[in-house]
Image (tube, rainbow, N blue to C red; front, top):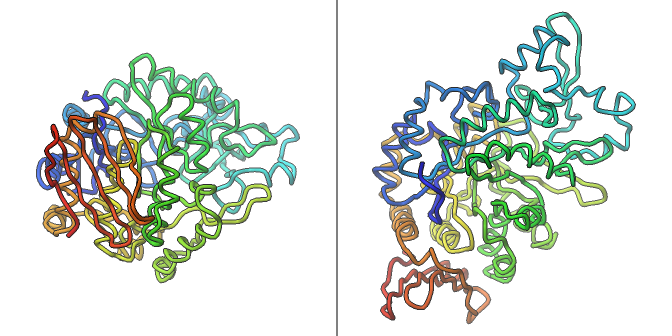
Length: 489
């Protein structure tokens, strides 16, 4: 397998760029040739829902996408990240079906968290229920009827096709060892999906509960450490959690960058972004967009409430007309006495920027220069607007940013001037040895400007960005000689 390197990583579903893994590889060799060093292939296993995140089993690649030889072939040329759902499994998994069929005699009974056994009094008090960090209006519990007619209530954080697992159960740990071990033999990086929800203790939020969460992490890391595979925890929450993870030496996500980038473009003031670039972790993967929405809660404390509201309200003007196609309200969240706020913005990043190509190109190029390894979501890479047809057909709000491209659509988009320029800068970012050096941010002449550099005295890659004019200039300096690489259109 190819090891992790400081080169851009593409994020895509197995079937979103042409239809399957072979088509993905064709895209990487064709329109995206030389643009990426890594690929995060979103769950490619048999799944019963949530577009791959309700994994039935990790033994096989979904035949609709290909097989293990396809994954191995891609992993030989690109550093690949795969997903592991550390918090839950599909209700169609063999383990859950065995429990439903055999009840208390099933060896997998302890793998699942029984609601009435979790709470000391058999049910949560009003205070305990109010303290929970919830992703849906009702409590995180679902009723199931076993084959013997017994009704059980099991912990269910997310969707109907998923059921949470108990990481402390020996049978769960055997499940982790078997499946994580297989993945770790193939890819150098595994993402722990919904990691913060896996730490549960009565009387707490049951979300990133310390010190429990570190024990859960240790359990999940055991099969990885044996093989030298690294881990990236998926945690959509306040940036301080990412800092705590980074302090322990783990890779983290920069989920604060998307809202900070939107604020900077809308205000033409780089102060908030500059502050973050000074303090953000260096061992991180950066994002502007993913298969989920644009996180809002991640940036609390880096932007003021008024600034968060201003960005959200502006983007919501784009989103509001889409609400006729789905029944879900904007995700809201409240913790303790904190202000109720929107959890995510359901839109493509290009549409969030009101489909302004200059603004979107600027944001994409700046992301390539900030500290960390840039992850580029496939829709964003192709300057994709909101897919209203997909939203109308599915009623799933997140589908608006999950367009499945045909090979012809990919080729057409790649020839658009803005996309072509972005791919040109991506190729430079992937190939330049300057990014093996250090990161520096230089003083700017005006509040709207940002000057970022990678490398050293002999070889550097320099970006000069101006958010007022929505323009940029990329240059490379080798032994004192400066060469223009790309600039805004």
